[in-house]
Length: 280
Image (cartoon, rainbow, N blue to C red; front, side):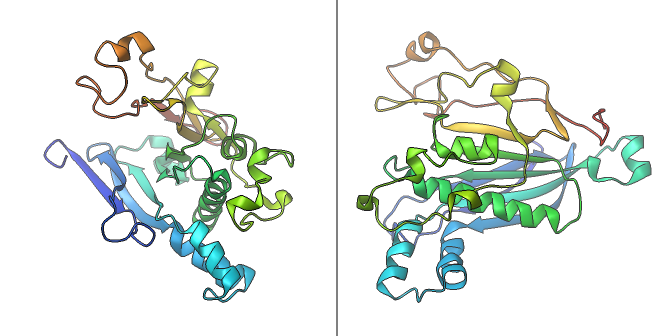
């Protein structure tokens, strides 16, 4: 990647829940050197946030029965990344007024995959958004934001609702899980919220989410999204998702000889807007 003109950062998953024998992947972010400079890089370990939740927020001993049960449910080794990138060639407007329109914050994550624990994925999403709140507001800027990744959540989930609507309906099944799923890990429904006004790139450009972004023998549906702050970013395009006939031409499911991943690549051209809604 470096020889191709890119710089990047990588964050490996932690190994607490999977042990030394588990398969370890992670998250990576790359940017073209001629277009961006790295200003800041920050990584998130959800296991660490879970430990903080139990000891500092709830006030439990992590070795107590209740504390250990919550930690065991939340510690799934997932991680996230944040970077702040600065445009290498700034517009004259951004040079003169020194507003942060020449910078953008990119977040990247891969949430827990087990479909039977939507509350864990919602907890991870909520805490990612809270970390972004702290990260951006501490800088006192109106920093453009993109959140990308595999959220392992379809558009009918509470995760999607929280990202797109800043809240979750109290009657949503994802926040009313049974005792069989272990201890309750979610705060009061009124506290499941955030301050970011986000749009889904593909929903905005195409008018709806794709039919699928993941296509396997066991599952076919949308799990991956590119979210953007609507007040200062505008999606100009979204690369088409191949239809089923194009995918099954090379096999019954993904990956295949033509598509190296079971997930479809998502691509968009984004435009940074200034405070008046004009291009920066």
